[in-house]
Length: 92
Image 1 (cartoon, one colour):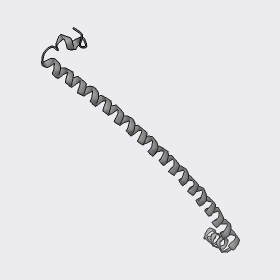
Image 2 (tube, rainbow, N blue to C red):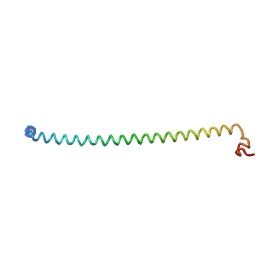
Image 3 (cartoon, rainbow, N blue to C red):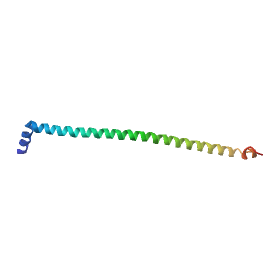
Image 4 (spheres, one colour):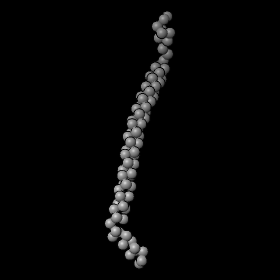
């Protein structure tokens, strides 16, 4: 009970309450600054994610092209051997 009364007395002193409020305000400001840092990091992550997405798209496009060429080659080989002129680049 004595501790509770001392705490109540301390809070009735206006100077202590003001100092405590100032400390809390300073801590809140520091935390707000950290929010700004986190937002900057999030922006950086978003930009890097966009670059990764572009790379994935480019790789996928390249793989699709290679698969299409392979399918064309398989289809051509199933149709039979190519004419000799075509194999030698048009020279007989």
